[in-house]
Length: 153
Image (spheres, helix red, strand yellow):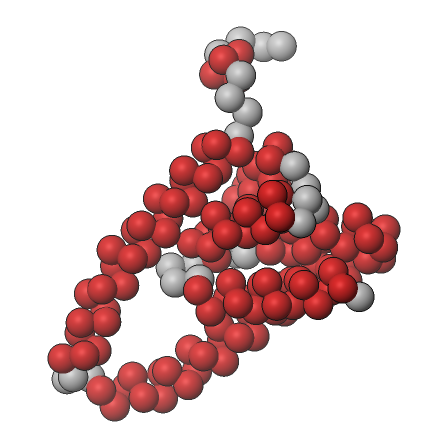
């Protein structure tokens, strides 16, 4: 139950910070899943990220897989499925609700200077978050020199 509550609060808060998509919060997700809660290792997180990017559909699949990993360590396969569902719903509902409310006011403020400033400010913010994701994922990946060779093993 404690893990479920932790998944709910973690992904609920990450959803509100996911400017530019779910990949923008990968550094914090990695920190919480690998270093703080020990739900998975660096290598497992890199594998989960690779699977979520290679699979068809939205890249938010990593949220379900991290939630599955968290639940699996506590409650087996059923715990993993519950963890994946909790993480996914927690990532979608807060951000979707906030965007709905913001959209109601955003349409009315089309000529506002504040709106244009916010739109221009989000571009570099998003680029910075994506670059932070690239840094974290490159550190989590296998760095053995043989991994860079194109030789069959």
